[in-house]
Amino acid sequence: MIEVSSAFTAVGVRWTSGLLLMYVTYDVSNVHLHRKYVNRKFEQGAQMRPSTKPTAEVRTPLNRQRVLRTAVVLADESGIDSLTMRKLGVAVGVEAMSLYNHVTNKEDLLDGMVDLVFAEIELPLSGADWRTAMCERAESARQALKRHPWAIGLMSARTSPGPATLGHHNAVIGSLR
Image (cartoon, rainbow, N blue to C red; front, side, top):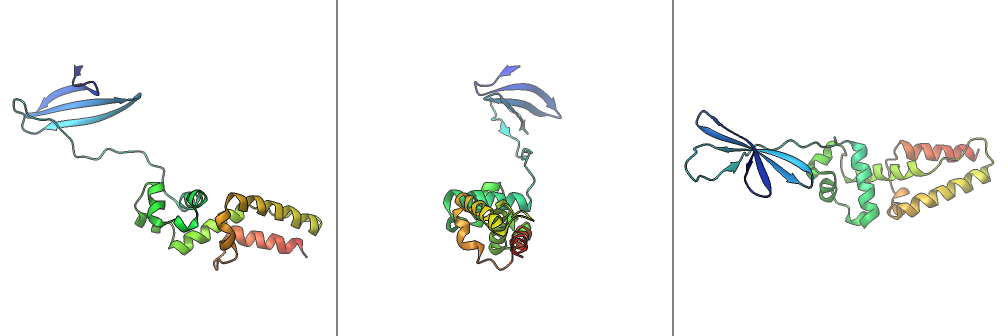
């Protein structure tokens, strides 16, 4: 092993067809990263440059649920008015335009976020007294809206309800029959 500097150490050096290849391991708080250094024309005292090939990193696949959950977290932290597609893209680790593969537009994003909030509200129990069912539903809605105060104004204003919203409304109407 050849000591290159205190930040990294070379773990392999070899000549291939007149090229000098050096494999380097970085040691940063017990995380080992490997990078291949290539010097195309090796001369005495020439500088070693890192390969320009991007390193593969493990990413969590992006899907609609992940986009919506991250948007809810961002809205909880800084409010619905500060939520932008660009900030959401940064939060999930993609460019803003990549989000449009999972949501049609910002209105679709808001509809999905409201549907996630409705999914947190417990449905009234079937067969229970309507007063008891409505009191339990009201308490559950209060707890959900305390966690997501930005949703209060959006819940009644959305024109495209999602499955959780429709299921909630259906259960409420069913308990009032």
